[in-house]
Image (cartoon, rainbow, N blue to C red; front, top):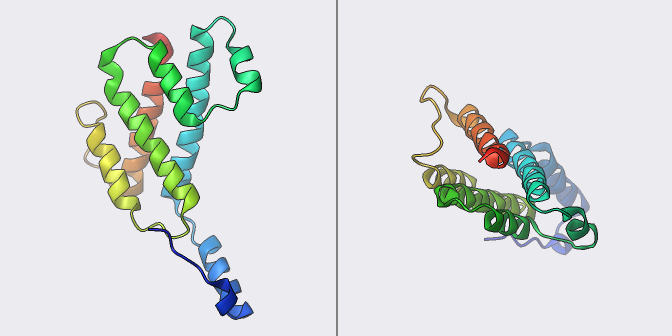
Length: 152
């Protein structure tokens, strides 16, 4: 649930402190999700470009959302063995939207756990990795899978 702020009722010092506190807290996990999302989008566009003879025209004037690009790429990829990947990419997009539209990130861990569950049986991270290193390894493998769409 989004936190509702009533900045009018805050003193200037309290409002400034609140804002500074939100900007000073930097979570590398959030950064990893945002960067991975951007790279996945780049790979999806590249994949679409390889499948369509004149994709530049498609993207030139249209303002496709990430989800629309993913659906287009999925429709161009005719292998049902990749359905899990589309589910994971869609969930990554949901997490990115959650991070981008919420000041207080209280459900991040449960969203990451759900991402892991969707990929079970397809993405394997060694048990020695925990926390941010586990997420980093997971996202690297996910990026490799999306990158390799051109090869399948």
